Length: 64
Image (cartoon, rainbow, N blue to C red; front, top):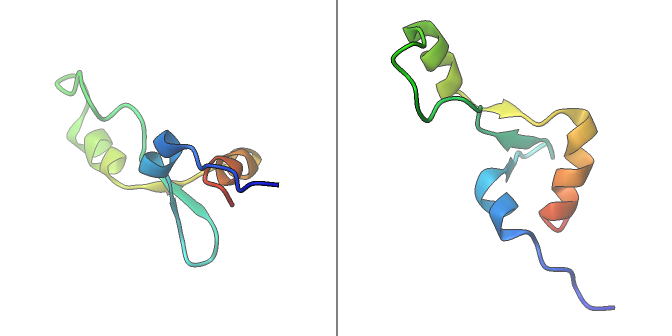
């Protein structure tokens, strides 16, 4: 059976950590920033991990 291609859009959005967790950027940080507080915008800059229920699907998209 041939190798599966990884989803190129997913490749750009997710990273795998050394322990095998999937990192992602937070949503709601790209526009309409004037009404959001500085604290909220600052917290949106930080990355987070993908939820366990979604991790399996994301790993499949990444070709893992």
